[in-house]
Image (cartoon, rainbow, N blue to C red; front, side, top):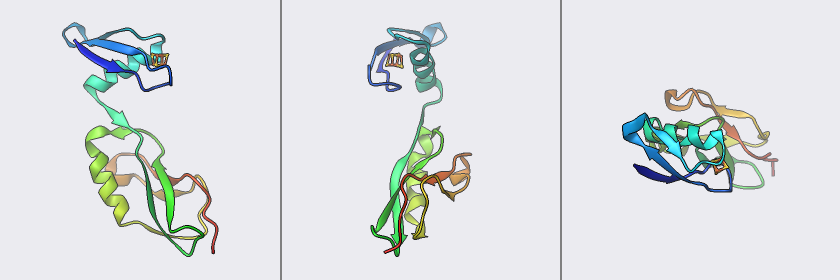
Length: 117
Ligand code: SF4
């Protein structure tokens, strides 16, 4: 039996996932918790948030994120790939900056507008 805290919403339900019983989940207050508990044990994923270099803008770095969750095991690979990204202002919120980052199927998108200096 694995114990987890559900991170899908702020309520933070304490989940128990029975690995020997098809990853049956208890302690969840809604179906999303059951789905999260099962996924966390079988195929954990995360949305990656970070910043990348932005030249010519009001700020030196632009906040970014993946537009969908990626496999947890590829997070460091994606972070390393972002080190080589350099943008030029202007950048629009929601703009796709890197397509299919590291073959995950997720895009890296800007999470704020970056106006030129
Ligand atoms: S189980 Fe449902 S209510 Fe509980 S933290 Fe997860 S999403 Fe929120």
